[in-house]
Length: 102
Image 1 (cartoon, helix red, strand yellow):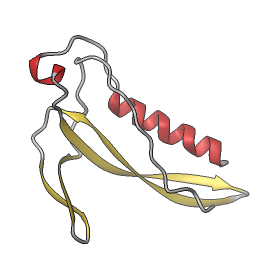
Image 2 (image 1 turned 60 degrees about the vertical axis):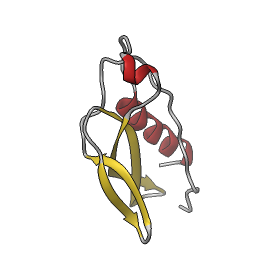
Image 3 (image 1 turned 120 degrees about the vertical axis):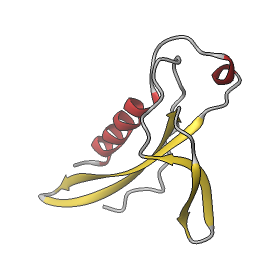
C-alpha cells in the first residue's frame, strides 16, 4: 500500500469516529467534550510485503473518561474503546503522523 493510500485509510477511519450531524447542546457548544480513545491495527501491503500499522484515534464521546497511562510517565483522561458521540453536529479532524518508514 502506498503512502497516499495509508493516509487515506487513516483519514477515513478518523473521519468515521469524529463526524456526526445534528444540533449541539449547552456543554458541547462550549467546546467541552469527553474524549474517546482506541488503538487500531491496519494491515498494509507494499511491494508484496504485508505489515501491521498501529493507528491511535481520539474522538468525541459521551462516555466518562478515566486516567490512562499511554507510555512511561505520559497520562491522559480518556474513555478507552467508548462509542463515538453522534447526533451533536460536526467536529473538526486533526491528523498527526511522525512519518512512515516503510
